[in-house]
Length: 596
Image (cartoon, rainbow, N blue to C red; front, side, top):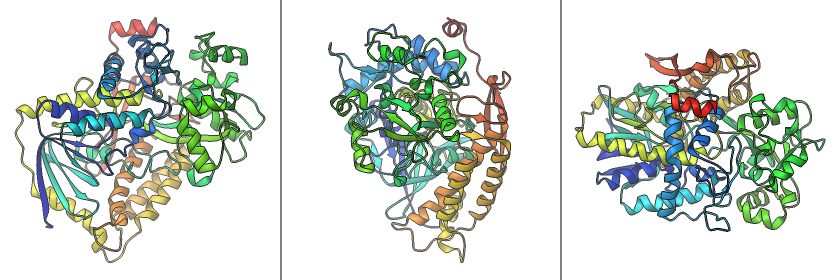
């Protein structure tokens, strides 16, 4: 067995995005020792991709917003697959977490009265997104990072965790390696918090960076935790489509929140079409240009533009327009905000102005953007208990995008930033309470030997596949067969290909040694990504209906029976077992809110 370093902390936080750092703040404020492990560098987390704002019902825009309205919007957006208790906690605590962020030093945009400014977003009844231009996620990560660092947790940067270590059914630490040196490390902990974010790198076009390979979900699954709602992968309606090298990079929903208009190649504002307006949203959205204009001018607060429908609806609409031959020059649609004027655009959307100018030589103050749906977020993840963020494994907690339960079948834009604050804090608090009374647990050396052997195999194998080839083929089949529009035939083809790739991935070969070796690092990453892809596709096959992000061309409508079930994936030997569990029943006081 290779040598390894052993570290020991009361709480181990895996991931240094908003959820992980907020959890670390809670741990250190209670006086316990804490390590934060990040696969990349501190400050480089996908939290920065949430550009438009943090949703919380502060009610600063002279509108009758409340946690109850936020609750109803979130449940409706999630097509009622959400855990109602989780959503209630979230909607009630989101305002407190935003105000807390301000006390940490966050600098929000302001109303003329000096209050935090709030902008509209898809699926939200009122202006609810507390924002900093179109750089809200960047400001959030800067703020919580500064606060966390001031409390002196141990930060392990460029360190990849590859296995959760267990003592019986309890998680008691993790095993990983330093990405620069290749040195192995064992981190013992009384409690472990997964805050590893989502996964999008199994798709060809995604807003996700290289880190998003599903490590957290795969490690939790292999350790025996339940994964839930994994078929629900969010296709953000607007990603860059030109030039080809930047296809998939996010175009914030804030563009539409500030009045951006979607048009097809015929110049039609196609979101007005009846076929794109679900019945349960009619009456809330504008059906004419005049109504949309009046809303933009703040003359009609109840008829917001159809471009601000929930993301799943807008993404499908764009997809249908392109499939019908009404797409833009490069295969997307046009997103036009030029009518708002150059000064307004540069003030409210500075990052978008700079992004298109630098990457595409496009001036969005003078010409429209070309956009198309991109893989952006996952609603599924590790099942967690609402109050504590505890998983089905003792000693393991999960928060943020790696956890399931809040967003159901579709996340509303802006809910992610307050999600990581609300449940990052709760996971940290619960881990502290557990760690106070828990012992260290025993780590079986066989688990370490097994993981070391798996990691070292590609370096010692006489022959084998290139992990980058496996990854490329996975992206092709997922993009082709598990993208927005899904069918039994396409998903079955995709699953067959994934299983073939998993077999091939057991014999990988990479040159060099463990130092500065991206090929060696990718060899383990691709195994995580393949397992998560398998779970996604098996769940998509099982859910025989169209709901939220799950759009089946062979099962086009909502099925009442499926509306009462969450899909759960568990490890059964070497197999993935898909089961169902009932969506938790909504309490009477919450039913009144939804029915009101």
